[in-house]
Image (cartoon, rainbow, N blue to C red; front, side, top):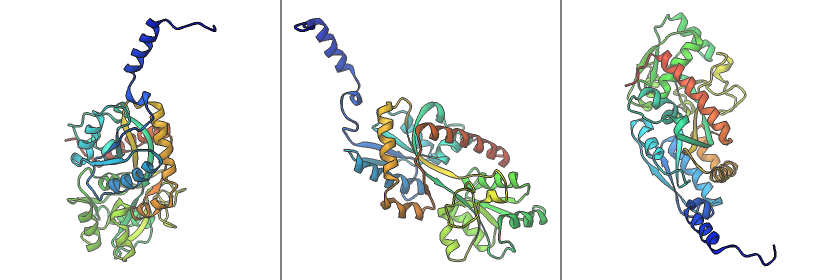
Length: 325
């Protein structure tokens, strides 16, 4: 009513309540620098893609994104640091297949549960694994490699970056789907495993694309297929493994996450700026170098993707016969 005044007691109560509101509710987001934990070493695919995407996102938001590399325990160290941060949007995490869906399956010491402890903002990229073999092998396609391995009755060798690595699980899953056997030869790192295929010490490997594509271009490895859906073409006309092995998909992912409890309006702001960033030409070179496909998503679609990925990796771990340590 005109002339009606609010009682002083009510004004004081309202003011006190406003003082209790969290910072994100009182000011536009972000109003200070945002820390982004990268649970990988500098120069890795996760680090490279996370950095370039966040740098582009910062152009649309009024504050810088500060990268914080926390490598260790196959990514679990950095993920745990992010998990315990306040869910206010000022500590984010660049998550990946290895740290989010594989580490909890293989490390008993991991205490975080991805679907319980994190909010999923948006995917950044999908990264295919590539099936490559030594050029001396008498095969040109995925189907021919499988037939060759079957004919050799298990007397072929599959390289990997180590027990429980992405290349180990991907290769074990391919054998399970394809119905063939190869002897697993683990190495201490992806570069050593790929080098063993180049030298002929092993016959084939299913490895993240960045580890192999320069050697394919140099003619030192033969590219047989990629591990993404047949509808996608991350490597030009390279066929999908799925065309020869129906149902087989084993792509890695990189995405932006946060401790559980992120305010919806912060999630929306970050998701929109990430989607806009992926449309910029400035990112193209970094993605192509890493064999990655830009892929923004809704928070709900990202969570669903991770849910599926956890199950895929659980089955791959079982197929590989790996025990958590």
